[in-house]
Length: 386
Image (cartoon, rainbow, N blue to C red):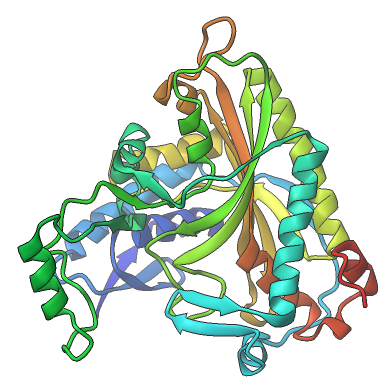
């Protein structure tokens, strides 16, 4: 582990420092980011990357001059609980660790998890969304058409089968038998090329299925699925997982429809957060693009208010986590997949997404580790009152 100290002429704002840290973590193995008076100390596990990290800090600091937060909604309610609920949830086996970044759920935690999904589905039903079911894997072509490998290589998890021949399968079966010594499987000569990967988002398959279509009108869609990203909490908490679940509401059509749909869904989401009595807010955000020219899209997102996050306070950590997001894609997917309006122009799109694990975790963090501690109004809203 190595430390790199970078000194600024004047310390960037908290929002700008967040942008710099997120960009570094998306591109390097960063293990610490400590802020001093005019200095940041960056701990990293890269052997020969100190110069590259320093260059990226300088570049991100310059780019971040345009980064400012825009607060859309703030539900400032008193915090009733400040303990970490996860140890008790694990002790009662409502939350069961499988390995870092993966958990199983049962009991009241799963009941709340499912209730959140149903509540977001109810929002989708209110706007007339068509419910969809998609695979949890993407063909490589989908990744390619939206340039995902280039923009988010740090999040990619690809899948590869054993080669389709007897020798490869026989060797693989012997090499990885139960009594063999192994903890990982090398992607070596026995493996075929990856033709698909685990999906890092749930909405993209919706646009992929519309490829080449001329839309007859504006439309809402909704889907729920598992998402997979190459990330995890350093302390194996529920705030950052490799495998997590998301309910999305997508909207596709004219640019005016998409803007109106986003605003309508923002209003529904604020009502949703109030009903849950969550200390939360909605503000502008940026995706963690990799440290190549793609990073400029983060600034574009911020300047044009293309992405907002639903942030819930986690009292025992004294910080916020994103429990959902609101995204405008402009005509990106319309152009990528040749989705056209009746007038021949590329369709615009957007989506809102709510993460089940993080939202459920935030509720337990703010309301308590036992449902009988929770406000009765919240339990009634989630149809969990006994």
